[in-house]
Image (cartoon, rainbow, N blue to C red; front, side, top):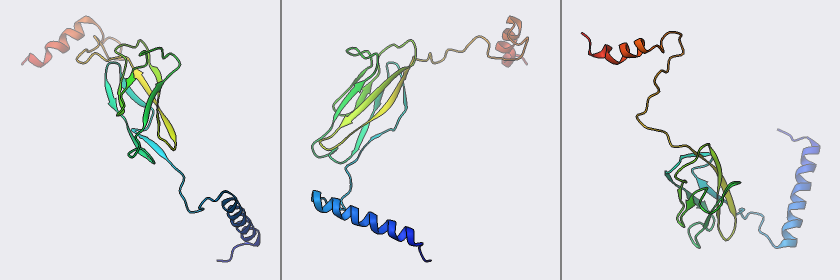
Length: 153
């Protein structure tokens, strides 16, 4: 396949510019850019009172270590939770509505962040009285029938 003339010219121009920038800065054009990622990636949902382990991966994350930080619009002291030096996030014990929080990690070379949504604690084992969308099924008689129907022969 033969490349059109304008694409060959554009490629040559990019190569020349890249070489000029690298020659002026002393940078190696083959060197990779530093990166840092957080696992799990966001937005991550965490229930109030629960914990979630975050892991930093990338340049400088193992050698010199990283610094973790929690930020948010309504964060005063521990209102948005806390995060330990090894990335264990502890959500606040109670929230009345979903709370947007940002977990950030910084190494000596680069930093990154992910979003956390802290949601109110669910009541496990709690079942709403009636979950039917069909008319008539939410009457007390129907609910009593549903409770005892498995025990009738």
